Length: 158
Image (cartoon, rainbow, N blue to C red; front, side, top):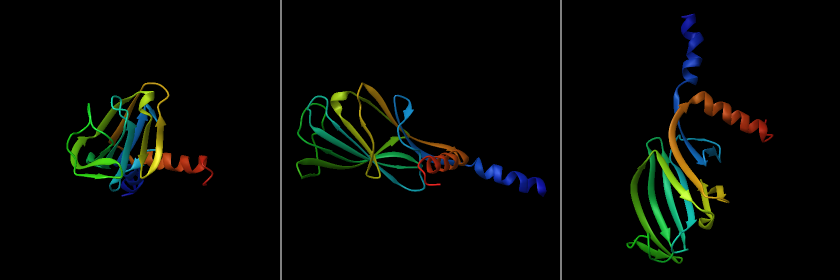
């Protein structure tokens, strides 16, 4: 019984939890987010050809990423030709597309991206051509707990 009680905390800390990660050129640009429910993610950028603003909104949970809405200004090469509504100068399309666990983008400085999680900007740029990856994956609970504690200590939150 003592052996079980000794190893129980270790087992609990090794339980996998699902997280959302954002990387630019293989470096994490935001703290991991523990996915205990749905988390909203928006990727906004200047379209490379049409030079108009595009926003893609995603929902992330332990099952992966889903594209739920696109907003864009103008029409042309590489932009959708069907939309549900037009509001505030944007064509809007409501969607429900399963993306999987990884979303990869290749951005250039002219794209001037803005990536937001829960309406907070976590990445702007890039200053040079960059690969941006958004990933949903499981990691041991202890990693999330240690990173959270380290973040609080480094931010002066105790």
